Length: 56
Image 1 (tube, rainbow, N blue to C red):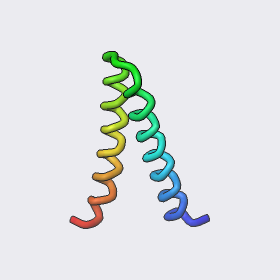
Image 2: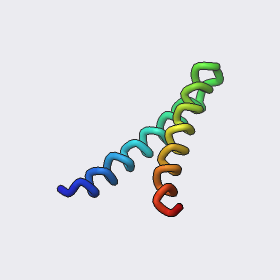
Image 3: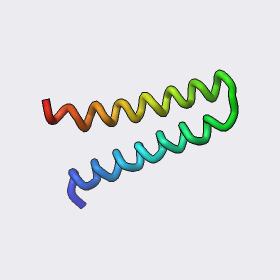
Image 4: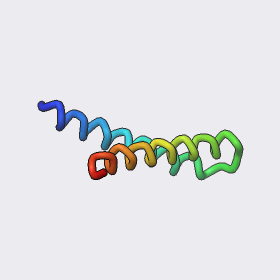
């Protein structure tokens, strides 16, 4: 497996984990769950930044 394919798989798994954290944390209202949702959002924004970085 090439390094590029491994990098894509890692980013895909990270995106799925971030989405899962957001979806799971939204079921209960608390400050801890708000923090988890913000952490998941930060992860998705980080992945989006990494993707768009090569187009600048």
